[in-house]
Image (cartoon, rainbow, N blue to C red; front, side, top):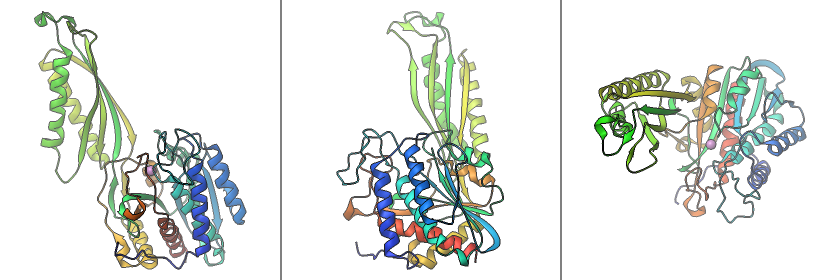
Length: 393
Ligand code: NI
């Protein structure tokens, strides 16, 4: 590694050390989505220890802290997620999960530590702030319907002027940060399709309506929606991931069930793709005398970064970490419930690189050996804090 990792002067070595300790505590004590009882208690206690914050528990295991500056002004919200995943950790590190089958394998422990760090830093600089900062420690990002919707519906964020959310990224080198305007993550929807035919003897197909043969046609034709109806520069994914039918090798079953996921980068495209899927399903099934039941489950909305909020974030990255730290990460087809906040105010979701070959922190998110380069914590704290300081200058 020839590149030097940038170090923001805004964050003291002391604060960085505390953030690493918080992160390790959280990593060793992970909790699943909607079950973050100890995690939220730890976050609340840590926030209490800073003094000067108004702390609320608006919904579920979310913790929200408000810092009022010395003068009136804008309100900026900063968000981290706090939940872990049902994965058996395979890392041999001193801070490995102490809970079998539960692991911080997506870096939410790091996000939480970053936001705690930013909160402590900003509490100490309260006199400089014109306006308010709302720190959102959100539960249950990993499990639809997610925690963000509840936080939004609680009204605790009413009146905010901007919101920024962070995510570590294990395929982005430590020292790099991305906050691109436009599409960042996809709408993540699910579907179940029942093909309804008419069963009978495997030797007499003409007396049946074979739902398996029809299902095969439907699966093939659904891919036409992606390959022939979609602008290649506006990505769409349709993945059929389950297929269930039949009980015996000499019986044609009466129905077949197909399940899968659909990913799109805009609300408009989501509607079009859903409609196109139904048109194909209706056409193919009717062509072969079958009928269908199509259940399309709308999941998290796409994450689309606001232009001005992204620009503000980018300025903070350059100010704290230098021009070279700022990179552009292409949109990914994963989903994030951070999108729910976009309805409230201009929103920006930024990636903080945590990949370091030498430390072995390049495993994909949700992998049993996922880990982060803890140097990234300082970067996240600095960008969060600089964004807020500039917005409330
Ligand atoms: Ni995540």
